[in-house]
Length: 400
Image 1 (cartoon, rainbow, N blue to C red):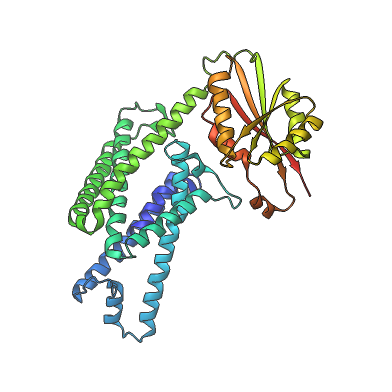
Image 2 (image 1 turned 90 degrees about the horizontal axis):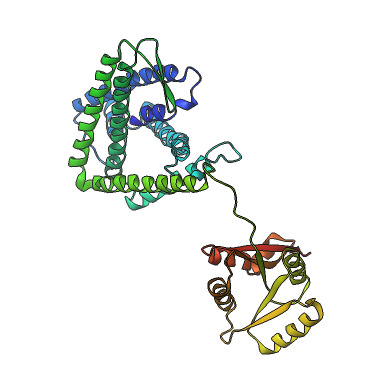
């Protein structure tokens, strides 16, 4: 019942202009329909003394009492209820991604939530909601009695906050002089002679929904409501941490007061890790020499016999570039290379010097062939991202 109202409040941006007026009219009609259905059903189920049960819904008990279970009308009631529940579930997938995109633009959730996919929907929001919903169903074993408190507390909390926000907005509108317009982030404030009455209505609604939320939290605490009381503060802290991070990054990337990049580094050292001497490694070597004259090739030796072959080939094809052989008695490849680069960065990197790691990478023609080769570039990039003054790049060499 509450999903429709929630959908309108979250989906105002989807209405045609004037959006607020059209959304308000829709909300009034929905509230009237909801009140009629809710009060009517509540009156009828009280008359038949229906008992809430997970084995049979109250709607089913009402339909079975009025009609026979074999009656087509009973089947229509159950089918109609099923369709309504499906639409209610679909509402979340329509509005949560949109709400997530708004929060992402305000830097309270990851920016990916604001990205639209090829079908012009917020893919990350849809996928996130599907995963969270599936996880809740598994954890609570699809128990309606245990899931409803989670939903109800969240909904009434959002109603409380939104109506309290509207009451505060009407209070600010009351401070605006007639004919004056005050610009706010996302909206404009214009004087409304009925601001006090509207503020009282929203304030009363906020208090009423807050009381209902507290009743739910107390009466359903042992039935699972305690989870929401823990999750909501944790989510708020998580959102604030995300917002703080984005604000910090924005400040550090801002050009305000920026005087330009520092002078070009005096030195540029290039390291070329090679697993063997072949066309791919020679292509990487050629690119490395175009960057700097200080180039060093590094090979991790796991087999002494293969090392001598590589040394001989390098003397023939290395074009005079020095070759460093790292011994690896335990046949490890990444660890000796990372130790060498870490020692180079910490103990031998000169002030103002940039170290570039040029990694040869051959690209197979078939996509599935990629799974047959180690992606050295990504491994090095992941390990060396925390080091300042080190750049990792790859030189692709396409093979048939």
